[in-house]
Image (cartoon, rainbow, N blue to C red):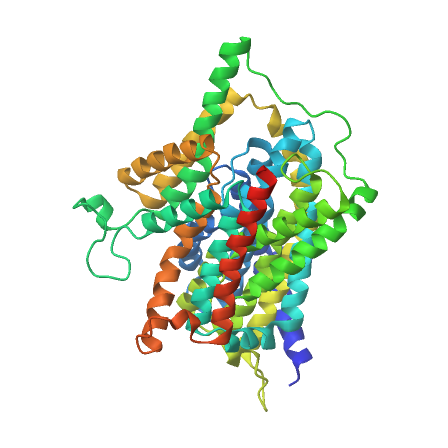
Amino acid sequence: MDVWSHVAAGVLAVIQGPAMFHVGAIPVSVTIVMILAGFLAGIAVGATPGLAGPMAMAVSLPILISVFGYEQASLLPVLGFLIGVMKGATVGGAVPAILFNTPGTPDALLTTYDGYPMTRNGQSGKALRIAHFSSVSGDTLSDILLFLCAPFLAVLVESFLDLPEKTALILLSMAFIAAVVGKSVMKGLLAAGFGMLVAFVGTGEEFYPRLSAGLPELAQGIPVVSAILGMLILGEVIKGLEDLMRERSATGRISQVAETGDNRLALREKLRLLPFIGNSAAIGAIVGILPGVGSTLAATLGYASGRRKQARRGGAEFGTGAPEGVASTEAANSAVSGANLIPVLSLGIPGNTAAVFLILAMETIGGFNPGPSVFRIPSEGMNEEMVIAFGIFTAMVIANLLNWTIGGAFMRWMGIMIRIPKQILLPSVLLVTMVAIYAQETSFSALVFALGFGVLGYFFRKLHISVLPFVIAFILAGTLERTARQAFSATGGDPFFLFSSPLAAILMIVAVALVILFGRRRMESQH
């Protein structure tokens, strides 16, 4: 059997799989129904402040397995639902970032830089349309790359990235984000260092508590969801409530933002955004191929690249409500999802949190073992794992079609949420966020941690320190420690293992050069 026979078998496994119901005489596959259900759930979750796609995937996975069981036939319906959630949440996540300045994920924080100023300028509808068009365009390009290049790209990347190189790559990622985001490189580095320090509280790679001060609540480490949502959402809510009180005491009323002018997205505007979308989508796809990096680095790189392109063109400055800023961020973080399945399917290595649950579903149900053997064509018969892989590709295509149609209508409709009064919205966001944290952690201490990080996020904003380096360093600290320990052991205890290979040394030199270069530029711009 050749490749095209496996492609056809994968497509038919999705379209002609077990029927959930019939429309007249036409059977409707259970996998297609699950993709649609997951997509709608993902949009709803992504558009709700305090919730995110990975959280919905974590809750739904055990339910799906209990419903469908552990047979191999249940793999595509379960993965179809998870893929739908992943796709829908990526688009829906731009809604709270643009309308309310409350990003639910670190990469959505960059969308707030231009999306929320557009909302304050009465262009919330246009910002939502730009986010949708850019997100789906970047996602589609990434999926095309996945279909064409999955078998050999992942193996190629893995052959160049050994443990020292992966450690250096993570350090480069954190250095880049600390240097690029915010107005001060030093503040970015301090925020990243503090994020790593907080992440090291608890056991980590050791078997005894670190930095816990003898408190049992700290011995298990800081809950990830409490730290992230506290910094990103609760900190913004606290600052928003303070701004409301100041506005009311100064003017005697609370102003409301309304849409003004034409909020449609014309064809000429789409054409003007295409260079930014294409550039960021390519960056997101490349980052998605790299194992263990994630979408936040893609969003940061896409935003930084778009800002340089805009500066050369002489358009509106990023951070002031530039449509190109929204397009650059959304195209980059969406382009990760398809390309990220390359290391997932070919190597079994996730590149972001959502991919972790796809791998968990594969391992729990069985019948599919990610690795290079997935794309090997047998001399006789069919490679069932390859059929499932192309079934997953088909699910991605269907989810993209839903994104172009239902997703667009949803984003246009969500503009009415801007009419909700702030004095009602902000306490509601606070309540939903706290409920989401408790639902995932089921402990009162998680709520206390979240409030503490919310206050910390508030002070970060008051001191004009970007919270993004803190959040990214907090997320990557565990992976960095684990990879660095493994690299140290693999090189025989070499203290200079980060310079043990030419590629690792180049990555470290680039990291240092980035910090110095951007630090000088910021100092020169201030003078």
